Picture (cartoon, rainbow, N blue to C red):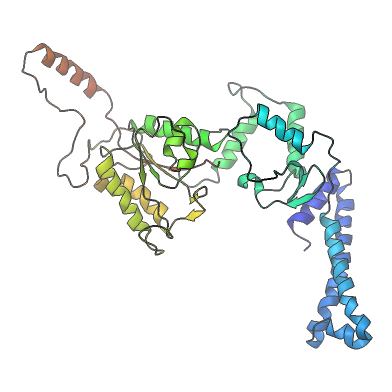
Amino acid sequence: MAVCIPTCQLASGLIAEGMNWWQAVLTVLLGNLIVLAPMTLNARAGTAYGIPFPVLPRSSFGVFGANIQALMRAVVACGWFGIQNFQPPPYTGPSLGEVLQLRREFVNPALFHYYREPLMVVAGRGQYLFDEKGRRYLDGFGGIVTVSVGHCHPHVVAAANRQNETLQHTTTIYLHPNIARYAGALASRMPGNLKVCYFVNSGSEANDLALLMARACTGNFDMIALRNGYHGGSQSTMALTSHHTWKFNTPHSFGVHHAVAPDLYRRRWTSEDSGPRYAEEIQNLIQFATPGRGAGFIAESIQGVGGSVVFPDGYLKDAPTVTSGRRAGFASPMKCRPDPEGPVPISGDSKPRTLFPTSSPWPRGSATAVRWARWSRRRRSRPASPSGFISIPSAAIP
């Protein structure tokens, strides 16, 4: 009880309000002692005598003894309420109806709310949100899992204020220590060779950049995504998305192929060890829907928009292996250099295939054959097209 998120937030909040560290610690200590006293008395009877506490005061004080434990529990509740209590300043802005009208008139109509009577949130503190009337709500949504340390955490607010008082904005063509230090700290926590950071402002932009990098890096175009997946609302990420509710009737999805999602509740195989089977489905898609080469494979670690679908064990480990394995006609993932072994066989073939024939199909000496020879020499002088699928974890959240 003494070490928990509300207690730590209370102490830091008291310091932010003007207390020094020992005053904040003493306040938290007194609050915990007030709560601990009735809780200890409440548990004493069961520990010492093996009987519930309500039985002990009733046997000692008669009918009135039955109210003692209720009063003690009320004291505990008041203590916890006092420890976690916070009331924001009174809201003085426009009413809910005025805000709703302004939003309908001036804001993008694609924005929506789930409620018949929409909720207007005007303040937040810790794990709580407050509406315009001061009513408090326990936040179980977290801004679509983007609030990790609570709302308006004093340490976060203080750090943001310090930065705003020092420097608000500059361009990346100038150096600044924060972005370099943050990138280094973030990269140090990433596995393998994930050591370079690209900072973007949304999941859609992250996936759009990943798609561009995969195609530019490998020199290939085809992408494999999963059905029931969501990857963003931009033109390119909408192609990766496989939900009709998140697609507009515009041209997209060129070069994107959707494999069967490994959903253990709605698909063919439902056992926990069916991950490799679903991964093999990707090989069939590569063989029949692509030229045998591709730019990348993208998937969410857990399909969120599609209903919180958790993949079977081993799937996310086996799927990139299938897309990069030689039997499927792909080089190793994250391979952005010419393939030293040249073109690889497509699954089931005994010899390599190339996109263009290696010898001229026109009569020797003709003008077309001469142009073909010149083009072939120029092509051979360039690096060969790499052939690796890159595995991309999706970053988009609607």
